[in-house]
Image 1: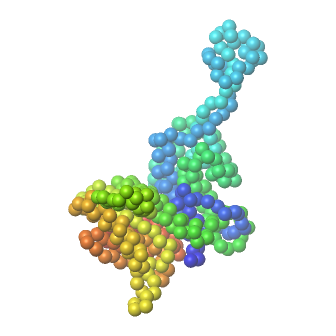
Image 2: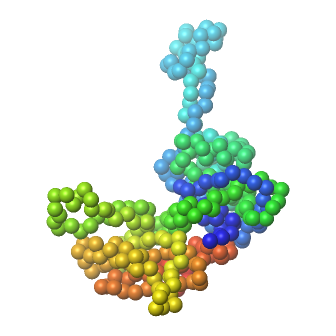
Image 3: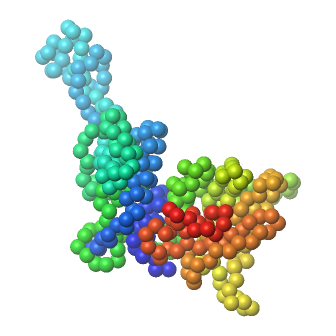
Length: 358
């Protein structure tokens, strides 16, 4: 599948834990769509709010200062010259923990940029002020330093925040056209695209559904509802590894919902000997096993199943109810423009086939 480079870049942006770059090359930059500042600024603000709540990433800065107790290394010459000991002081050089590090400065500058691009939203300027109050005062680092920040082990949890900040400050989305700008080229090999599709779905659901009270789990294991087994079965019985699970206790007063999502980077239907097209029986059996294995534990609120595929031979959105359990097969158009990709992911989890506005 030949996905536009622009859309590959956006998928990587949503799939924060898979964000990666395969080298650099001379390309041209595409103008950002009108919705881009609003969406990216919102994602950045969510990430910054979480960092302020849990604690900003920190660094160390060497300082020399008069102290009343020994910290680090004593500067004997400075201590003797100023006769500090007679005043109960000692001059020391030591490493001080600070939040005024390049990554936090970059994020503060991006929030100030967001406040300019989206003036109707006061949240961005407020978060920038909170960073300033927390001690992030220094100038914004050069954009060329961002690649090095991504490699720092202590900044791994900030990868999505840094990606959003970089996009807000540059708005340079690579295209396939040859140009004179040195921009990142996304990977597009099949194994990576399969994983990217799954992780992008998780990223979109995490950012859009969590604020509405949904729990979004990525890659959970699900146990069989076993009542008895032989001695050797435990060693060979496979567990069920799910792609994504969405769960909410009581959405809109309609009762709780639990959606088991499985992503497949293939066509949703295939040719058949006796029909024009058919669903893959293996996929149907797989989802049926996921849902029915939990039947005894769910009572009156059965889980739903959702098989997500990219659009290959046209859009597809159909569902079936088997033994009281809804199974939906839906597609996401990875060729569409703007943020229609996110809208397709969200529409697939709606109670009906009504389109969702991002």
